[in-house]
Image 1 (cartoon, rainbow, N blue to C red):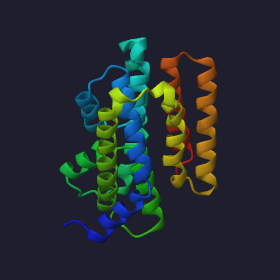
Image 2: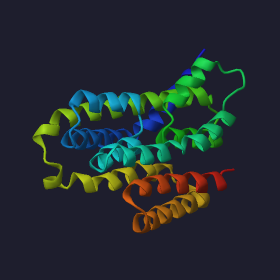
Image 3: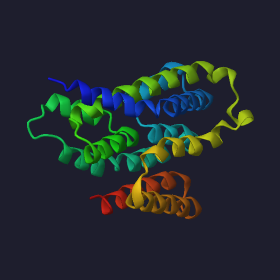
Length: 223
């Protein structure tokens, strides 16, 4: 039976990220349609891929061809390995395979970070807490994508500078999760690695390198 208090706490904690998640989804929907995706495909990608970083890499690298997209998205997927390993250690051994698969399906930075912090700082049932946070994330991400995809044909992203909003929105999502010296060191080193990659690597490998650096640094400093 699901622990109601843990579920509600997960919803409440993720609610603080809801505006940024919704705006993030709107931005993706607009850019996806502008790059040639149909509105329904943009929404479907949010439901199936369910990864803002991978989806923005997808639309950003579409003009470079499928090879560049494959390299970038594969690199981003690598971060799921340390994330899933860390999450698995927090779950009870007798948790059903169905629940584990559901939790693994929504394996994204925002709810993963919230779950790890909640598990360290409070008495929560981790699986139920993450379920609540995941519901909040998925609802806002899909709703935002649908709105953005609907507006896509009516909005010129270059005119309004929407492409430049991506890093700002990502920082807005990450900021509430960075607490303590260890987290700041991890975030700082990941940013430096991403900036270096942007200067010395081809576009397709920039995203991959940033993902690998962030995952490696996070694993190194994980308690």
